[in-house]
Length: 221
Image (cartoon, rainbow, N blue to C red; front, side, top):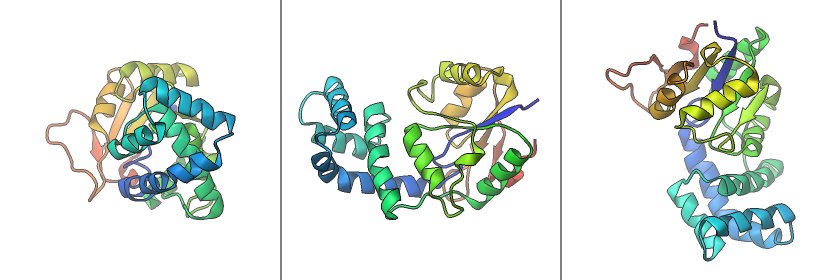
């Protein structure tokens, strides 16, 4: 029995192009000015120290390189979250969510099924995206958020930690993602899984051992 739903964002609830063609270029464009403007901010200083602990040298060049490579590194994700926060507040950014995902998430919420997010983007970035969508603030739909602080998304142990955190057995949780490696990692824990392969964004994988759908509308609990 499914007692909670855990979902990815990029390519699942929201388009890959929104992240790659809107959010990433925005953070790259704003990075130097943002760091200059917030050079005295203690949180920014902490993030920059963490960047230099991981990779020595000019942190601005390092961060720009990580953005270009789409590195899933916590200090980068935290800094991007801070920059995107400014963009959402000024109206320069508007979070994208697929219509089918919006309808189904709302339906499941109304049925009393707890919903959780697990994304490589920071929890701050997750809340900002869902707080500024074309449907308004959707954060009321979710009971919790997880990012890479809980662990790598391709590591089964991360999903065990999440299940423990929300107080359920892994087999009581349904995980939705477009990424086959994430689906396989979560399935190893006993989680129920569905791969979302959206038209124009990802293809069905032949002989994939787990269910695949084109949209949330195909998911019946």
